[in-house]
Length: 515
Image (cartoon, rainbow, N blue to C red; front, top):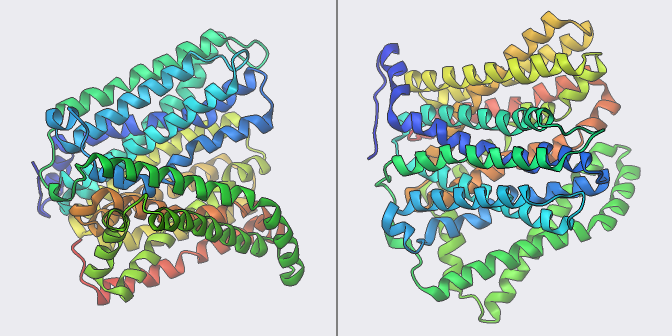
């Protein structure tokens, strides 16, 4: 049942964290945070200890493409009831449970494959299954969070979810590595059984999420009239998703040679390699989207997919957003979504390399950046949730963006001082506190933009858009550092936050939002 809480005393705000729905999001966040590093860092180290070449190991990062394409997969989660499970648990809980069971199965499949002896294709299949299962869980948990509480509680729900997610990443990252090492596997002495039991333990921890799903109640805000009940529509939607994603991937990766030639020509024209790289990446993404669109049009024109299905699945959620806010306002809101995290994401990509270049050791980075930094992020999320509850989303959204930009300037000071542990603690404290605060406000803001009739689709689009440009630019942060140096690079990332502040101020002044 949806719950709400009015802005009141500080004590009342703190008590709001004890709401059952808020506590549930902590455990669902843990469930969502477990799978990610089992595809990336933990799996990569397992494969390296098993003697797999680096080039092959990096290919496994593609197993997480489900996260990048979840806005395409989201309509399936948003529209299709699951046989038996939906009747038993309700719509959202049935999808959460289904995705969690698929995650457990995927992790167990990986556990029973020895990359040193077995075919790596099997491991790749299991990893891809884990990636898409985890992306599905993310989609439906986001939808559940938005539908199970009113906007006044979204910041607390999101900060609790972020905290659980970070804890889950620690468990499947540092926890998995420590467990595998304790069980006897290392780069010099590979032990398949150590990694097998490690992954089986990770699968068992997912039972926390399963129990939570069985205990929570189904939200009542979901609009059931838009469900697809016809089997033919089920098959069409699955076909559309599979072929559209295949078209996107094929065009993007097969355009690599052309992209390299174009990058060389643009570098000569502009005398600026980072700019050329960014332009080429946008070109490749545009081609890939055009490829997916072409596949969709061919399916429609051939009669294999009905135009009505495509309209209900993809066009209506987008049309609803633009009709609610108007085209000019909607584009400004989307610009804010795409730019809000640009300062911290672009800087974050190269931060570990920066620490190493200053002479900080791996133990120092692990203790300060990873452990202490995580605690500061959790504290920042907690503070952000309280402040949003007290002062509203827009004010804290602005403060979070301002602090995220200003804390980047502290990195300039650290670059000047060099290896200095007290300064590193100060920088990490300020950066992670501001990041946690900004994330809590931003997720609450994104949640307020969704319509409960299209919750999963619209939020999946927003969450994909918010990291698109920052990740593209972040991929070339190394080139920018080589070109400008660390201090100028950090100044540039701080200035990237200025348009965000202007957008928030304009939106707050001219647009009335329900936040």
